[in-house]
Amino acid sequence: MREKAPAGKTAGATPRILLDYSWRWSMPTLYVENVPPDLYEALRMRAHERRKSISAEVMGLLEENVPTAKELASRRELLKQARRIRARRPRAQGPFPSSEAMQREDRGR
Image (cartoon, rainbow, N blue to C red; front, side):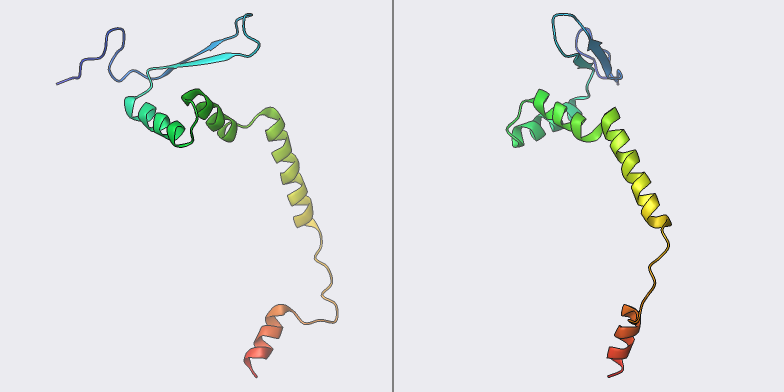
């Protein structure tokens, strides 16, 4: 038998996200509807454990998990640097044996 949804809600409805870019606020407002009860409860508990409001906890999760354009550019630059370092030729070994050779020598003693 199917559960009866509260008035105005449909059972199993997908969450709906609304953005409000009203002139009255300096920042956009995000509304999320039809959040599954278990997800909402987990979020509420997480916020309670951190002594935050649910709104502050959601903002923290968004900041941690949704990269901004600036963050993506920073990641691309870091990747370029890593590729440049990897592409460099290895330094000459010099007069010293490798650490592997030194360990083998020590085991033989």
